[in-house]
Length: 287
Image (tube, rainbow, N blue to C red; front, side, top):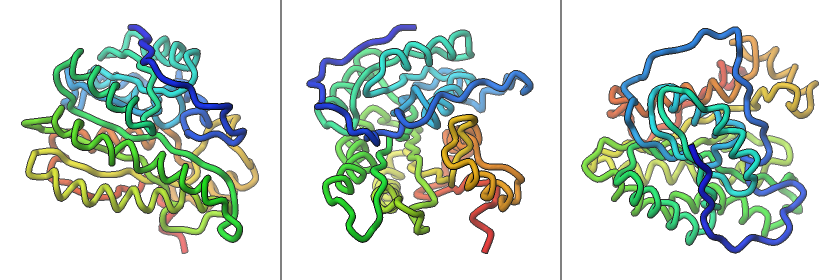
């Protein structure tokens, strides 16, 4: 396993609230009480690129796919230390993993990353878009530049990357899965930027699905509500209240989301197109 750094012009000082969700969530530790799952879901040998893959949901997806035997490319934008730690955590799983540094919200870096995947593997079977941006603010008095940044993080990797991704999946079957949020359809306090962005992303998923289905590429999304990030879960009181309202009895974890993403990558899910699968333990069913 190795960490490969793509040449890039570094942005200025990162905003305090951050621009990508990969920096906002710690990598989920493996649960020693959970038995190993030897099943591969038919994903052994698949080549998967996961964006924002060194922390949070992205890391959980990378772990799930690697456990299933896929060769996983972990994309990350900022922290080499997080990438190195992620690779250590994935060491010895069924598939393999490498990490490549590229900010996929910047077209030139995204294209360089996809070109590197072509050079090294010759194809791509799975693309998981889990990068996001959140600038907390109300809708009244929202900062337009920050909203545009949230929109860019949600849309640009697929808007700019779709042609090259589709070419890498030529002949199929291919899978593109985007990670969305219940904030796309509900008014979450101070969530206007990512809420608008995720709503737009879900619309884009539908358009891409229609255009790519004939090329044996399935495009879908997985949405969830507030996540249980362990000790780093913000606003514990709100988290506890939401967990109590969840029919499943707890908040969703990154691993729960990763399990659904992996299911959408299987051969059996090939006839699912342009759908947003909600993985929230039933929370969204509550009135």
